Image 1: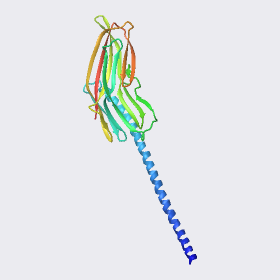
Image 2 (image 1 turned 60 degrees about the horizontal axis):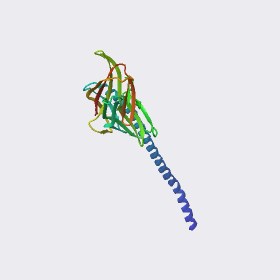
Image 3 (image 1 turned 90 degrees about the horizontal axis):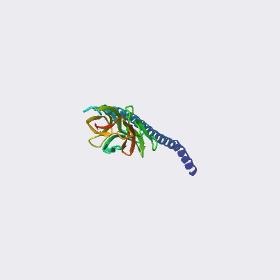
Image 4 (image 1 turned 180 degrees about the vertical axis):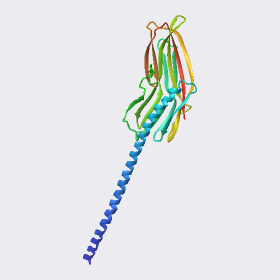
Length: 269
């Protein structure tokens, strides 16, 4: 009897082995399929996030075109299309301190705050490397002196667990233009400030929208005329946020007038 029982047990064990193996194989297959599906989903999400980031860069360039078109157009308005799902677009008013000073002419100065537009996306979707920094518009100067230079700066930076794309405007100085006035030679230096602003701090996500730039006012303030210093030059220093740049301007006449033009551009949806 005992021998017969042992044989029956062996037969049952042999019969169970294929069934157990099939269960293990099936479970392993399901686990592998789930892991592959999760990985494929993550890859797809990263691709979608990266595609959104590339599209937002193009939208920033289009929005800069809109701002430049309306900056000196009273009551002008233009917009650019944005699609944001994986990142967030922020309108940040009065965020950067702006200061303009002219050496030897202490009365020629301007102090204010300006805003910026920023897009942020987690590094889960776009990872450019720690400390990454790139300008897609402009450079690290706070002042430009040519119409061929971008007045706008669009800066990509990776900080901590997110990538930022920030758009803001620096100062443009043109001239001098020399004019004869009552027998005297007068230099006119034009200083243009685009003051980007918004009604309030705003953040937009999971939406398609038109970001609108609207001219809400242009003011001009003239300083001078002042007698030109003996060395015939002047240095204008501009501080924007934590960055400072200077430009030297050669003057050719007896007097100089500085015209400060402030173009206020409101940003909203």
